[in-house]
Length: 450
Image 1 (cartoon, rainbow, N blue to C red):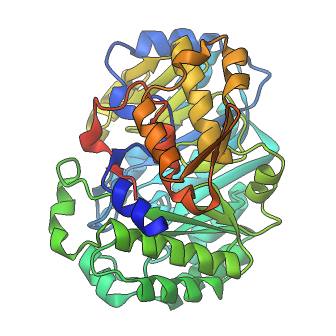
Image 2 (tube, helix red, strand yellow):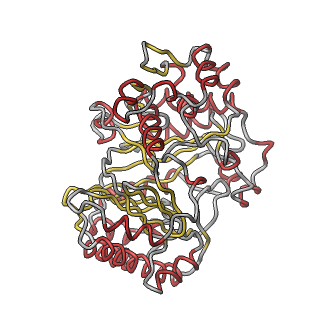
Image 3 (cartoon, helix red, strand yellow):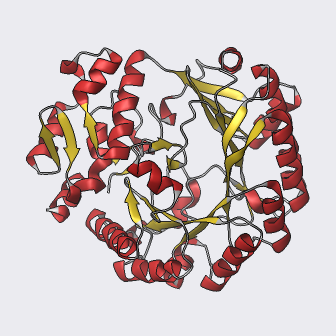
């Protein structure tokens, strides 16, 4: 049945549902003035989260879907980091106090492209502008190929306690096709440096559906990774959107696996990881039983945000940096995407917000449903309707899609409780999309469902 479902639904272009509505629906109707008003109303006793975007790398990986640019020099990175420090101060000033912070995530690009001194200075500025709680999770995305011993030490000194290492694939044929050469030895050395520096929680990021990739090469990569025993894995399907990311045109589309092969790769990796003792978390995460994510799953506290699955319960996310997205109770905001535009606004002591989205009552209702489907593979529809005072008759947007999924054996309805069957969890995005009132307006920027 799985193969038939992968063929039937695999070509659909669907969001990853790390937010609802998704970023393509943001507009200039929400801007700096709105964000300032929203920041002033944030409850200052409730913990918030911070995401910092560092849009620089030393080389371009052809598969990359992030906002990033290539630099060989440290000066542009140092100037940008100064902008981040200023923005943190401007946000704190707009809030009117030092928000407590429970989670910090440095994303990219390659955040560790900063010099150790620049990183330490930036983190000191964060602690000055915000109250970083003693038990806060502080995570940094890392390119193992460029991580130095001094940088690992600076991370440990600053309080970083989780690192996400990009791996994707150890197959040299695949690496050549995506312009990313990375050895197991480089990766193992980076892991050792981090652990030695006190960064004890390690995540690995893998991709399937890459050019020339096979089930065998996926499993070989997983075997090599398991030997290093990271705490978590994120296993994403490659999203080929060359109209949006022009460097992806360097990838030969003819070498990409079809939906059925992508499904085989995904499930082979999932089986190998679960066999090695990792618990499957939602669609694409895997964690050791003692990891925070696994505990959140067991206790029904699993959430989903722009970094994927998380145990972060904060309702406020402060986005710092070019293209960074923030979330407050009223809605979403996004900074200027181009680094030059971002820095120009910050230099004028302005917030960098240029677009966003104000949530409606219906958005909150549908966001709640979609998050529970994505996290729990199930949702209590009557309970959701009561909580949001919503008419149960209009909860489903695409009834024909949901009926097809039920008829095909992917979904079971027990009364009015929706459950995704165990062998159809890979279709969770398809199930969630049946409740998406915005779907269809920006499908060219979404990835394949399988």
